[in-house]
Image 1 (cartoon, one colour):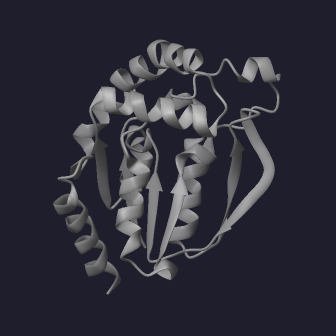
Image 2 (image 1 turned 90 degrees about the vertical axis):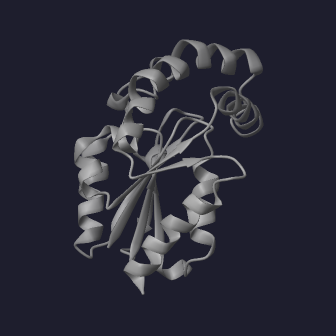
Length: 202
């Protein structure tokens, strides 16, 4: 199994890159794991306490579970991915059964922040986007999809997202094998990633 880690700041366009890579590959041979599904279980906290958690800090992620799940898949066994709710700031009771594939894409802002996870990634990709562009995308997404208001999103960006990006996410660019600029010129980088995958699964 070929593991591809795709990291980058919030709103950098990771999801777009994932789709671009997956679009030309056989669906049956490529799977995806989202880091967002692996936020720690916070059932022991009240809703108000959970809403204060810094979800952009590496300690918010259950890296142990994510790493063990990747190892299970590599060993040819199914896993049950957790399902996380951004509304309740907690895991739900649901899980998603995920089968081993020839290629597994692991996507999230902090994917390259864990040494164990980096070790399991055969190809490490960092999606780079200008900070203004990332903020605009984050604003649009959080207001449209997560029911947040503009003041709340901007406040969170200034107090949490920006400092966490500078401290934990941007430095992981140094671990990337491929850096993809998320603009109209990224087609060559996408083709390189696809070529690596095709070589491995053909």
